[in-house]
Image (tube, rainbow, N blue to C red; front, side, top):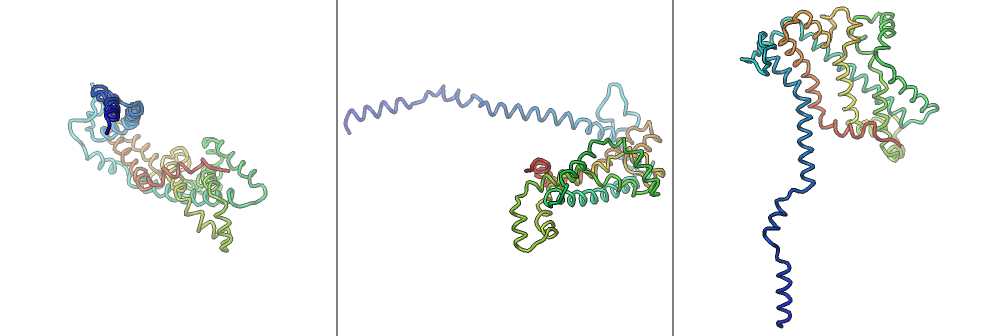
Length: 305
């Protein structure tokens, strides 16, 4: 190799040599993307702490002795963990009965709501019939009517049917809502029409297409609708307060908590224990359906053509 070539290679190698100090500064300097990601995580943690703190305080209060619920200065935990508060929450009132009533009403109402929503959503999205869009607009218009406005006429209707102070009055009036039909319809509109054509070529009619093609695809959306419907029934207070006379026989969780608070107004630790117990069914439902919720929220009510 000639001297000129060797000198050229040496110069090139010298130019490629990196200063160790500058390399250390480059490695130590954080990237802007990492800084933004770290700030986002900190903000998310703060927001999560803001939402979780009332629940933590509720659980902590449910385990306090009665004389340490209100102390000065306030404390998060008492001098001892009183697990017996949860036992007393079931003995002062028939709280187990309230839980069973609430689960029954919410489960049956959710099943009816999901069934009606998926059938009506399929009819509004895939079937062609005259006046479909106009009927759907009128159907959606019912969402603008507040529930408080419907309480009196609904009670008069229940009284005429003889359903006052029955489970039918708690379940049937709110099992047919436009929100569920809207969510399912919007999801069905995102499914390509070619699937219906392929099923029709294979000899499937509208009913077979619905059960074999559409219904399996709509499971995530139905999971979201089931969670929303169950929570709505579970937390409903105004309508059960109006239509239920015998609270011990047909009362749900909100009415049971009100009765408990009325009899044990100073026993806040027992009230908090009962509130913690009332949260368990919804938490279990969310855990069981969590794998469908994200996908269902993404696809429900966002598509359409």
